[in-house]
Image 1 (cartoon, rainbow, N blue to C red):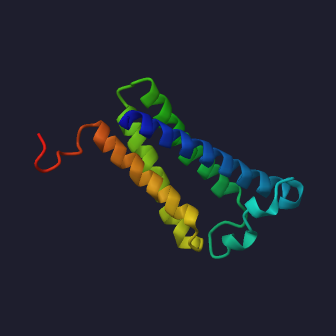
Image 2: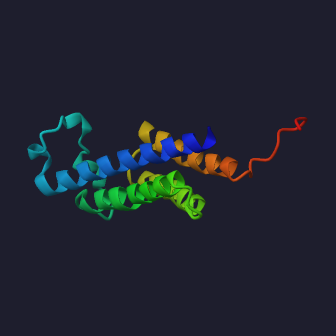
Image 3: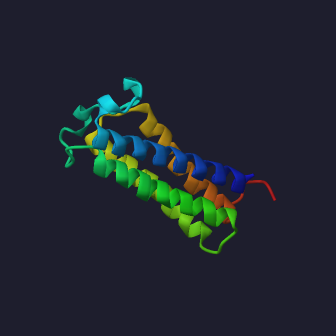
Length: 141
């Protein structure tokens, strides 16, 4: 159950990070008016004010390739029972936490930030349980 839950979380964050990064890169390259997507799901350029970026190209690439890439690697290695799977899953979990920390410096709070932060914490917690580092509950043997 723990392994399956961790795999599901890794897959979810991988897919949504890659999709979100792709939308950010496409909107930076094509312009939001030519995307053909509903305006509600596009990120307004005003969110970049005060950040080191003048378009969503670099943040989109980082989200898709770094955060999404680490999650894909963690998923594949855990799925194949590789020796480095715990390390990859830990790096994936920390990558989303760092992404959210940095994002909150520049972007006003959004409920999705809390959701993805919780997902990162859950990934790390599930990994600890999977490694047998969860400890025991008092009174149970």
